[in-house]
Image 1: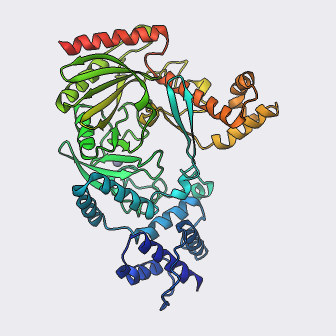
Image 2: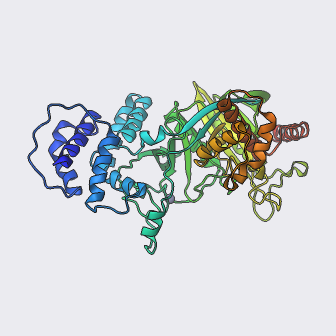
Image 3: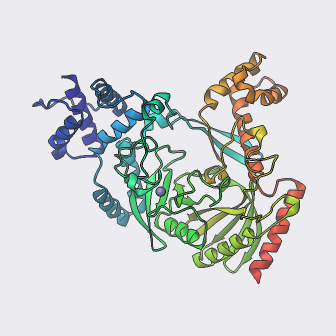
Length: 496
Ligand SMILES: [Zn+2]
């Protein structure tokens, strides 16, 4: 039977990747054949152990499972759910994984994260074949290089799933996509397959947190740190302590928090979590302007589309103390000329803090945010404006604050159509009316240069403008003046 060969290929793959040991062969065979409801048989050990590509093996097995009515419909979502259940067979128990992780951590934290990241890919929790489809480029802007990505790895909603699931009630377990109850969870209407999902327990600020990798990998070793309890996002004194505890543990990673308010916050506000990873972001190369040194803490501001104050110190306590004071100062700061009102009946000012370490120096980027809306800008005054929604409409979170664009999948095809319209001087179809004004601008600017690069740079220019829209103090003479006014008042307050 062919399916038996595919199962043996899968087990050989798992042994080769050291997800399991040779001694686990029979155990794994019995478990996988049981999941697939395949008649077990004595198999001849295959001498030709050339390991096949995982996605090929899995596709064959999933076709078999679908044909044998083990799941339906034959959508990406249902295939993913079933696949994660299969790969769970080759994923350690959470307790064993944590033991191995901390054993390596005591040798070297880099070894521990390398091990966990590799495992998360080898067991296909992170689907590298899908992530490879993401489109990436870099473009130079007046603020320096920006990293651009069109994310194609998140599966789009399949109408067959929606039909299949209508009428089925969701439970409230797990409470959200971040909750630790997702570990080993099969998935449902609202939850993706997490049977092979694993997390590492962390102690940050004497509180229980967990480290996991993002399955969509927007950048290298894209990590999520989530709180044990399902409680709402809130930036406070504790946030800074947790961020620095994390970078003390993992100096090769950064960790940042989205603001705790809607519009300027993360996509999941209901569960306290942070994002980190191992990637050099454009903001790290932004031009710095020195402001002042108070005690052992240096203050700089960045020449950047958003309003960012950088704090640096080798003294962690002093840095945290100043960060809290800056945060409190900003929370109550209003500037009518810049359209910044800290409070109406609710608070509007927030901070996106991002921590990292360079040798012994702690670096904290504090991005000033405000979530006011108006009749002209119902989605947010300091949010990408409607003229840029053809490229990006979504919230500007901490990843984008750092200069990495995560653009919607629809752009892959839409940009092709725009390119075609530009080169052949034709009109866009009605469905692409959203790009019409932009195309007119592009026609003005296009002077026959290499089209691919031209479009990429123009998309980056749009993204840069989305970031500028999100900046509370604009990069204009009056905006810079107002930013300087804020800075001098802040330094006065901190010197008191
Ligand atoms: Zn939760």
